[in-house]
Structures are given as C-alpha cells and as structure tokens.
Image (spheres, rainbow, N blue to C red):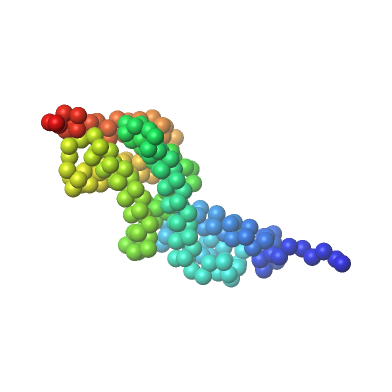
Length: 218
C-alpha cells in the first residue's frame, strides 16, 4: 500500500508551505504574539497576523474564531510564563532578603526580553476588559502577596497596612521596570541586572525602615 502523508492544515497554495495542524497553530500563535506586542490589542488585526504567518484569513480563523480569543490564549501563556519565573524567585528555601532580590531581578529579566511580550500583560490597551484585567491582576496579586508576607514576617506592621504597603511597592517595581523597558533607548539605558540592583536596594531600604519584629516587646 502507498503511504499517505501526515494530515496537514488546509493551507492555501502559494501562501507558505503546508504544515501539520499543530505546527500551524504554534506558528500562528508566534506571529500573533509578535503583532500584539508591537501594535497592542487595538492596533493589531487578524489580517496583519495572517500576513505575517503567510496564510489567508480563513486559515487563521480555522484555528482561532476571534481576535479576542486568540489574544486571551496568548495572555494565558504569558501569565503562566511570568508566574513560573516569579515563583522560582520566591522559593521559600531562601531568606526574605534573597527572595526580594531575586524577585526584582526576575521582573527586570522578564521585561528585558527583546520580543517585549510583557506588553501583553501590562500594556495591552484593553485593561478594562474583565477577562484581561483578571489575568493581569493575578500577577499583581502574586507579587503583592509575597511582599506582604515579607512585611508581616519581618515587621510589626498590621496586616491591613502590610497589604497597602505591598501594593505600593509592587506598583513602584512594575512601574520602574516598564519605564526602563518601554521608555528608555535600549542602547543607552542601564543593563537589566544593574537596574534591578538599584531598584532592589530602594525596595529593601523601604522594607528595612519599617519597625522590626525583632525590636518588638516580648
């Protein structure tokens, strides 16, 4: 019997080489990620994504029924990737000082990616969308809970106050990292590791200025 080729997505002739369906889907996701990172949500179109992938729009829609669903799939993957990076930095086997240092370094390492995929989470342009906001807020909660835990462990600050302070410190960290990544010339700005050390020193100085649990009356 004659062997038949593996099943492929029904790509149009002349628009690019045929790929198995799972490979085509991965390629479309890669192309869409680049377009959304460059153009943000409003500026990106399914036509741009199809052109970048060298397929027709009908082929793109065979895999993703809408731009919104395509973006959410990419956003889920991006949040999972950042969460894994942060959770590794927050390893509880480290002491609090080292966890803070590693977490700040992880944020700058993530923002330093030349693909600028952090914009999917932090600068998509559709933060008012409930499904998008829920996903980006999960990153803020993860960081804030770690900072609040450090504050409660090392100081006499009350829980409610620790929550407020942690939100402020996380806002400062993410704001500084985003400004460094998106507003400064890549060739002129400080290296990610250098900037992380500076921001870490400021964050830790703020934490260290709080009333210490070691000094509390027994």
